[in-house]
Length: 118
Length: 114
Image (cartoon, rainbow over all chains, first blue to last red; front, top):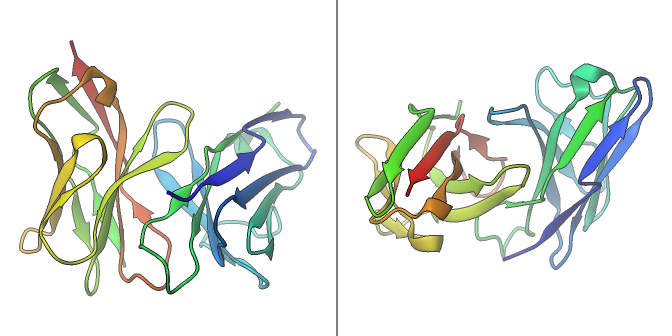
């Protein structure tokens, strides 16, 4: 199957700093990527839909100024957590869908990035 | 709005016994249904999907799922559980193939004892 890579896999930062998480589709092009957040022992909550070359679409309740998403190319989307606070500590997972027309329906997921804000 | 329900937080089975992880869904129009598995501190691995066709879908690692339209269910099954199947399982749905993200259930922890 298609491979999605996330980096970093684990990051620890001080409160008030910004952290960037990268999501790359390694062997396919993704016009659309999705960012999820997962709290311990809970489900994945969709944060935003990232479309290449356009602004991301955020889910209700997600602060777009805090969680900046950029999808500059067909293989890379980034999530920047700005001015991070301890409550932003979480497991962030990106996923990607292959280009329309060749999609088989399922999303391919990265390995996740664990953010710990001190 | 789309939604997925996984009524069990945890399922416990003995190795070698059959297992079932339940999932029901609510969606407008035709559902596209998926099962994923997650190991600790890892991303999600795709197991199987139902888009159209046969109601019984076979997937990775010996898992299968049965789509039941009248009961709006998509239960995950395996005839003989392995200890290595122990993990967190998510059912997901989306309303159409073209657009949207997957909406996930809360997850069910499967524990297989030896």
